[in-house]
Amino acid sequence: MAYLNFSATHQNLAGRIADEAVARIEGTSLAGSARLTFEQKVALAAHACIRHRHTTYDDIFIEKNLEHIVPPHEKMAPPHSDPGHNEVFEFIKKHRE
Image (cartoon, rainbow, N blue to C red):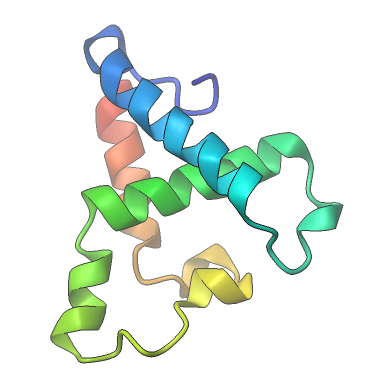
């Protein structure tokens, strides 16, 4: 919730994203994540939740018949190589206002 820092109007949405992010952290182990702080893991998990639930990211892979390819974020790629990166930051920005 602190990372998302959504406005009061969007607190319910922030709570749902935060709960899903925690579940992602508890249910998976990403390669290289041992070096990440808890806060970094939370941010990555929140971004993944937003990317898959609130952007066109998944639609892009389905549309191009690329669902069999491992998405860049699952390879711990730098954020700028992730096609949903800008959409995620725009989503967060919009809900902080």
